[in-house]
Structure formats: structure tokens, C-alpha cells
Length: 377
Image (cartoon, rainbow, N blue to C red; front, side):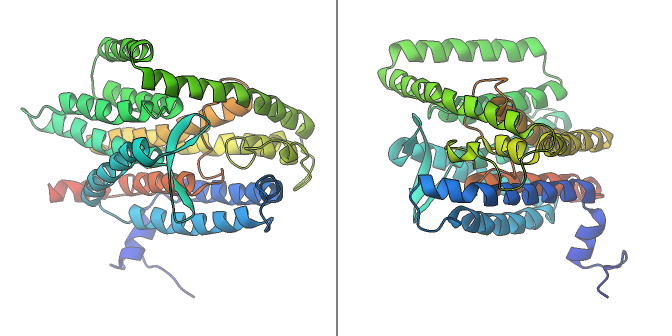
């Protein structure tokens, strides 16, 4: 029988005995749950898109999941030093992709967030989240360790370089998520709350002024808001799905609202879980995300390495925050923001970005990762 001995020096054995298995298993559970739900939604989604193969969506999702798992495990094996370097490279690529959407972006629901190539669509803003969080943590850690290093100022500059292009697409939901996680990291690093509020207020004034004085910005935002109004009918159907599911659900594959809910396999997949499986599965999904966030926060606060604390808490908050926005939108607790449910919603960008985030999170919270990082500095 194959066993990984604790004293083995192989990379796989070292990974197995140091990785946070609870968080890893929770991520696998969410991916498996998403696969079941996408399988159920695939025929109705394929019919709406007039596709010959009614299982085309689940087949594509299978490819995305396989690639995502490789990405997750591969990143989780890396040292903190390597994670930081990969974050810089990834940030430059993702930011370049965001700017590219202004030139060749495919407009969907009033926002040009996607780049299409070779039959696939890529959303660069999904990938900029985790690498931005890691880079911010790096700067804040360096600010504490190095006496004359302007880490705080550079973190503010990094935020502006990231948030403004994303907002200009316009992608309000992603901008809010990035801003919220960045604010959390800055507060943990000791910046006064009033300073963050002042910065956000200045940004709000700038955005408001841009709407009234820049025609192209006004045009993009007007189209985006018009699309938001169209989503209203989807939210009502989403509420109908939860009502139909009740406590135990209608049964796997027995949902009816998915036939008339266009984004049931993406933005409103939580509603499908509610209709077919009921309150019990939706509660477990919420608990899984909560467990990932709380467990990571506890681990990060125990670690004396500030980079680990800032990065791990930020990555966990981004996953939890995105999940909250998606689920609350489906439950009509907040306006729909076009955000997917991490690990569960259909989509290559969503799956790969979620797995990238989790891979970095697992690498950063590995046992002895901080000690090894200290030796390499």
C-alpha cells in the first residue's frame, strides 16, 4: 500500500504532511458540489444557447476542474518566496489583460470584462484578485520589517493601479471586493480607519465626477445599470427556486426554474442548489465557506510572520466575500453584481481563479512555511 512517510524528503511527502488538509478537503467538497449542480444545469443552458450537445457545459467544466486542481496543488507546494515572485508575474499579466479589455474586450451586460480567443473567454479581473492580495501583503510586511521602506504608500499606489482600471470596465462588484479586502489588510497593518475612509470618499467623488464629465465613462455605466435592471427578473426566478426547494429540495435534476433562469449555471447556481437539494445543502455550502475563512483567520493570527497573516487573511476574505455577494444576490439581499460562486459556478476564469487563490492560501498556511521563509530572507 502506498504511504507517505513523515521522514521522507520528497516534495510530495513534505506537501502532504504540511498542508492544511481540512481546508483542502473543504475546497474539494465545494468543487464536487459545483460539478453536480453544473451537470444538472447543463441541458437547460445548452438548450438556451442552441447547442447540439446538451452536456457541453459539464464537459467543459470537467476540463476547467482538472486544470484548476493541477493549479491548486502545484501552487500549494511552493515556498513563500516563490509565491511572492509568481504573484508579481501574475499581477503584471492580469493587469495587462484588464487594460486589453478596453481595446478588444467582449461587452456582456454592459461591461467589457472578457477577452475571447480560440473559442474560450477569459476574465482578467478574476485573476488579479489573488495576486494583488499577495503583493499588498508583501508590501505591508516589508513596511514593518524595513525601517525606511515606504510599504504603506506603495500599497496605496498598488490599490489605485488595480482598482481604477477594474472599475472602468465597469466592474463595480469586483472593485468593491478588491477594495474591501485591501481595506482589511491595511487595517490589520495598522493604518488608521479614518485614512481609509478618506481615500474611499475621494475615490467616490472622483467616480461621480467622471460620470458627469466624461462621456465614455457615463456611457459604460449607463449600459451597466440598464443590464442590472434586466437582471431583476432573474432574481425573482431565483427566489421562486428557493421557495420550490423548501427544506429538502425537489430532488437532483428535478428543478424547474432552471429552464427559465438564463444564468442558473453561473451567477444563480446557488438558487439551483436551493431548489433541487433544499435548505440542507445551501446551509452546508455556507458552512463550508465560513469554515475556510474562520480556520484561515485563526491560523494566520497564530503565525508570527506578518506576510502570512496579511496574505492568508486577505485570500480567505476574498473567497468568503465573493461567496457572500453571490449568495446574497441570489437571495435578493443585495443587488446582483454578476459575481460567480467560487468553486461552484460554471466558468473557466472563475474555476481557475478560485483554485489559484486556494493554492496560494494552502502554500502560505503550510506548516513550517514561515520558518523556511525566514531562513531564505
